[in-house]
Image (tube, rainbow, N blue to C red; front, side, top):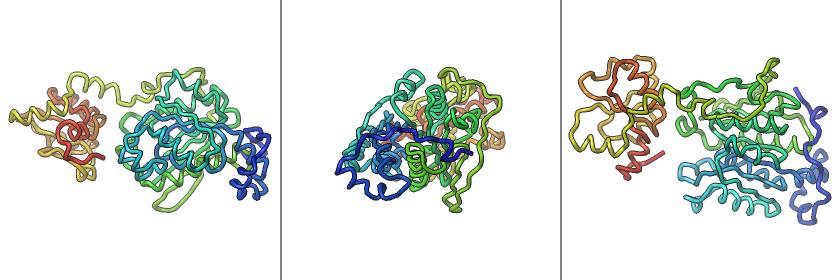
Length: 390
C-alpha cells in the first residue's frame, strides 16, 4: 500500500496566486495540508478527463471548482434526454449539443480561471498517446472495457498516473493506477469479461446519484496526487454499495509475471465487444426495423422474440413480441418454448444481445432465425416514433 511518503507531489507549484484566486480558494488555503503551495500545484496541474458523462460530469465540475488550471475533455457524444438524470454538467438547454462544448460552458460558469481543452473525438490507439502526452494525470470515467484498457496502456507507456471509476446500478468502484509506483488496471483485471456477460449502464441502468459519490472520490484522489497529501487508492480498490451504504477496500497486488505493455493494440478486438460467433451469426441474418415492419404488413407468419429483461419490456415493447430474456436462451432452458413451424425473429434494445441469442439459436438448429439490427430503439426511431426510448 502506498502512502504520502512514497508518492511525491505530481505537479510543481505555479509561481503565484492572484488576489482573485486567493479569495476564491480561501477555504482550501486555510487547510494546513493544502495551503498556498498545494493550491499553486492545483493551478499548475493539467488533468485530462475521458468522457463527460455520468462520472465525467461531477469530476469536471469539482476539478474546476478546486482550481485545477487546465482541464482536457475527451468526448464525441451529444447530450441526450436520458443523460440528464445523472450527467449534471449538462442541462435541458444543452439537448442535442456536443457534450464537450456543454461541459466547457458549465466549467466556465463554475470557474472562469480554468483553461479547457476539447478533444472532440473517439479515443483510439492512433490518437491516445498524442492526447495524453500534455497532461499530468488522466481520469477515466468511461463505461466500456475497450476504452479502459486503452487508457491504462497509454498511461503505462507514458508513465502517467490515472484515476479510474466505474458505476453500475447501485455499486461503484474506484482506484488509482500508476505503473511506476504500484499496480496498473491489468493487475486488477488481466482479461476482459466475455462479451455480453457484463451489461453496460445503457443495458443495466445506474442510480443517478451514484455518479456523484464515485466522481467526487475520483477528484479527491486527483487532488491528493497533484498536491502530494494523504494516502491515495494506489494499490487498493474501493467498492461502494449505495443500498447497504458501505465502503470497503481490497488490496490490489502487482502481477509478478505480467505481460509487458509495449504498444497500443486493437482494444475492440481484445475485448470482443460482440463475440466472433455472434458477429458471424448476424453477418447474413440481420434485418432492419423497416424490414420487420414489412413482414408485419405482408402478414408473414413469424415469431418475434424480445430477449431483453422484464423491466425493460415494461418500458417499451414492439406490439406482438414475446419476452424471453437472453440468458434463458443461452442456457438452453427456453429452446423448447420456441415454435418449429415458423421463422423466429429476435430483437433487444439495440442489437448486441439479440446477436448473442441468435448465435445460440443457429447452434440449436434454428437455421433461418434472424435478428433486428438496432433493436427496439431502431424500431422507435424508424418505424414508430410515438414509442418512448431509454
